[in-house]
Structure formats: structure tokens, C-alpha cells
Image (cartoon, rainbow, N blue to C red):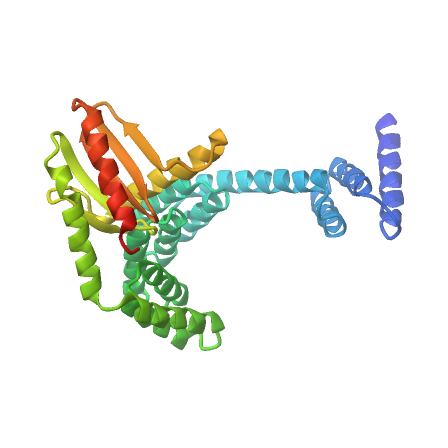
Amino acid sequence: MLKGFQDWQRKRQVRKLTDQLGGTVNSRLYLELMDLLKAEGDNEKARDVMYLGLHRFPDSPELRKRRREMVHRERSDEKKKLHAQLLEKGTPELYARLAEINRLNLDVQGMWRVCVAGLEQFPKSTELLLAQAHAWLEVNNLPVAVKRLEDLIAVEPHHYVARKLLGQAYLQMGRRENALRHLAAAKKLAPHDASLDELSEMARGTAEVAGDSSATEERSKALKELLGPLAAEPGVQGAFVLDANGLLLACLPGSKMDEAMAATLFTQIRSALTGGGDILGIGAFREVLLETEGQRLWVEACGDWLLAVIADKKVNPEPLAEVILSCAKQAAKMPH
């Protein structure tokens, strides 16, 4: 009997608060109504009330908190459901959706792992190839992202999103001819997308500024000469220069570092350079020294570039540090 009375009281309060929504109210009313609807078991209406409240009070801290909690809860529930479905029978769509949820949760590593697992079963899935490309784009690993997107259009040449992303990625990498080719293909698939025209104009503008390939070759040669003194230093196992997009500009002969490895390492280094500084409240670092059990990794900022040097940990670091700093200063003076 008591429960019946409480239910009646709650329904009466819901009607009363609902009637008040059209008048002058504050955000607390929406929160109270949400709680009552949840107690009634009507989560869908509670959700609607929350968004109505956010529409009227977009800066309400409590309403924004409720939305974050709701989104987190919904995604967690969906992830559990997807994992259960994948155990029964995996499909490319299930893997792709799980990867997307990880992306929305800013879990790039989780997204990457899901894509790898899915592509082992479905190597030609366009959904998973696109999801993995997005994962690499999230960490600015352009060379590997481009490889996945090229794999995708080999399976589906008329994939508009892949063509556009390839155009944007190649543009960032300074490879204007590749960018223009993919942007033109995307334009045929989506002739009314004005952003493609803007990107194409940027690519053509890059052509005017960048000059021919000989300028790039000359820069690479100059950087290799600049790195020369490091080759004479004992214990140096590799040295390379990366640009602002994580692309390998030059490395010492014998350095085992391809573009994909360099870009991945660049992402981790950049996180330490900027994120670490933010955490400590001291701004971005200009140099970093990382140590493993047997190696040291020096990183020096050279304008928009980074100079990274790998050396044996047993070597006295002080003389090498001076040579690295000298090389970084020279690289910073070069045209970027």
C-alpha cells in the first residue's frame, strides 16, 4: 500500500514539473524531473528532458555532467554487447562499430587493436580499413594512414571518404600530385562538395611554393651532411630529422628507421614534448632525453622539425649532447 502511495506521489510530481517547463524555470527543475522519470523506469523520457534542459541551459555544469555520464554509460553498455556478439560470430560491421566507440572514447590504442583483430579475419573490409586509417590519422601517423587508405581504394575505388582523406593526407605530406589525383577522383563522386575545390586550390598553391623535387633532394642532402658529425661519435646507433607532420626528412646511413616507424615515434615524442609540459605546468619542452635499459634517445627541437638521436647507454652522454645540440641549432637555421 505504501509503495502504491509513493508511486502516485511520484507521478503527481512528474505531472506538476512537466507543466512548469513552459514557464520561467531553472536547470534544477530539469534535473529533478529527470530523476523522477528514471525512478519511474522511463529512461527515454529522462533523456529527452535532459536535452531539453541543455537546450535552455547549455552552460549548466550539472546537466553537462549528466550528459557525459549518460554517454559513457551508453557506450560502455554497447561495448559489452558488441564484445558478446563478436564472441558468437564476428562481422566487419561489429568490429568497425567497436573501433568507432573506442575512437569516440579517445582510446586510440583500443581502436587500433580492434581494427587489427578484425582485419585478421576480414582483410578486405572497407569499414575496418577506414577505421584503422582513422586510428593512424588520430596520432598523425600519415604514412601508415595513407597505406591503409590506399589498401581501401584498391578494394573499393569509388570510396569517396577514402579519396578525400587521401587528398588531405597527401596535401599535409607535401605530395601535391598524389593529393590532386585523389581530390579529383573524390570530386567525380561528390561534385557538389565545395571543400574539395578548396583543398585542390591549396594543393595547387603548395605546388607554387614547394618547387620541384630537386629542392627536396637538396634539403635531404644538406641534412645528411649536417648529421655527419654524429656518425663519428661513439655509441651512436641512429639519427634522424622529422618534419612537423612526422615525415622522415633525413637520417644517418645505417639508421634502421623507415617512414612509418619515424612517424610513430614522432607521435610519442611530441606527446612528451607538449603533453608532459602541460601536465607539469611549465609549457612545452625544447629537448627530451628518454632512457631504456640499454639505450638513450635524445630529442631536440629544430624550429618545426625534430632531431632525434639513439645511442648506447654505456657511452658518456656529455660530449654527445654537445654535438647533438650543435646539429639541432644548424638544422633550425635551415629553410623549413
